[in-house]
Length: 169
Image (tube, rainbow, N blue to C red; front, side):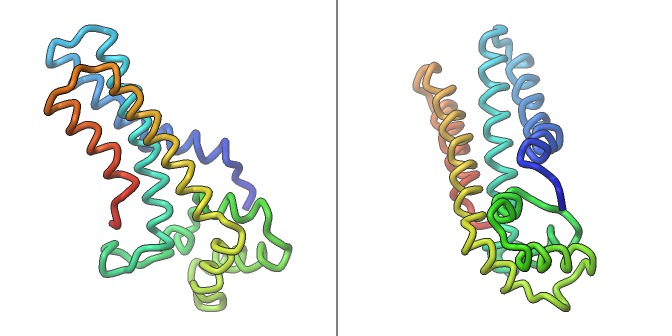
C-alpha cells in the first residue's frame, strides 16, 4: 500500500472537506453574507470537514462496533488505507507491513486478527498522530470563527468544531 499522506489529504479534501466548505458558502450566500463572510465560513467548514474525516478514520479503529454502528476496522477490510495506518506504516517493520498487506489482499481479518492491526497502530503512534492532525484542523476552524461577533450562531459553530473531534461515533 503506497498511498502517501499528501494523496490521502487530497482525497479527504475532495470527498469531505470540499462538500462541507461548499455547503457553508452556500449558506452564507443565501443568508445575504458578504464575500468575506462567505470565504471565512467556507474555510471554517473545510477545516471542520478535514477534522471530521480524520476523526472518523480514528474511530474506525478505536470505537466499539455497537457505538460506531458498523464493524470496527471496516475501512481496512474494505481496502481503504486511512491516515492512522499511513502514519503507522511510515515506521512499520517489513513484518508489520505484511500484516496490513494480508488484510488488504484478503479483505478480511481472517488470517490477521484486527487486534494485531490495532497493536501496530498503537505501537507506531498512527492513531495518536491522526488525532493530533484532526485537532490542528479543529483549531484552525475555531480561529476562523474568532473574527465573528459573539452570538448564539458563532457559539454553535464553535461547539460543532469541538464536537467533530470529541465524538465517539
